[in-house]
Image (cartoon, rainbow, N blue to C red; front, top):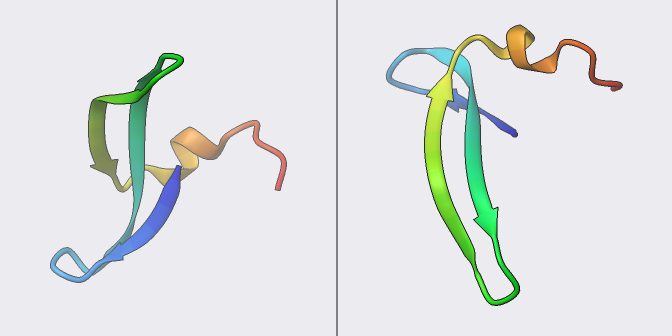
Length: 46
């Protein structure tokens, strides 16, 4: 997960990427942004 500031929306966003890894490559399955950062950081240690 990576946070960034969206200048158009004027708020901090979280960029989430779901990948599938094989021995020879990484394939992006899904990529999306969300402003619900606390929802995805619950339970993670700082």
